[in-house]
Length: 254
Image (cartoon, rainbow, N blue to C red; front, side, top):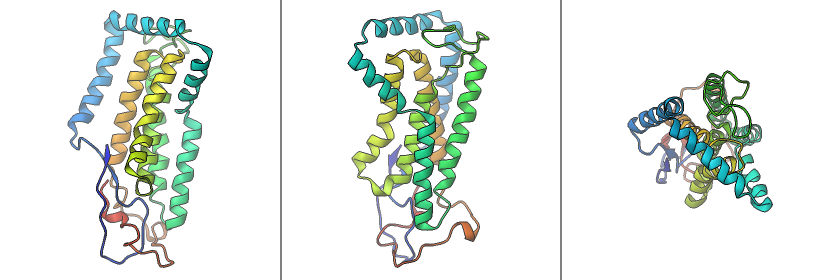
């Protein structure tokens, strides 16, 4: 996922949020999405039928347990919390509400509100179905019928989805380097942090990353700028802010 190039509209209409550069799905085709689904399904199947993958999880956990000095451990806890769902949902919705208020349109709120719904349904559904324990309690095996629900990692998936949505909302207001950093760095850092401190198995984090990337790609595919809405929910702003100040939403690529 990258940002499209900026351009200027000559229509003279009022400015709109989420103008160019807009985040686009890269690669654009559905093949990569299919590979993500196949990768998640293959990983889940391998955890059931290929024991060496479970031994890899144990090896990574044991190595991290032996190499965890206090300062590094504290840092990794911070990285893990980058994927905390509650604060991320709050920040994403607040940013979208600010954009909605500023530009008098509900459009930014729709993807921000849909992201936690889709993420929660998929993550919680998979966790309850697979019923896997954590690295230091419960069963390492999937479908263990225990109370633990750790596969895939919700924190890693959240860090991909929510920061991706934030990058989409703020794309016109951030330099390219800051936009890419916001979009990609939190997912990688959360992956490292939650695996290192033993909150999740390595394969939990891999599964969460695959799922999060799939979700955010699906969200970015929706043409949020052109979805028909009632006029009362999508009014142009006044006050003399014109398109040449910031390109039109409806001309932006998604």
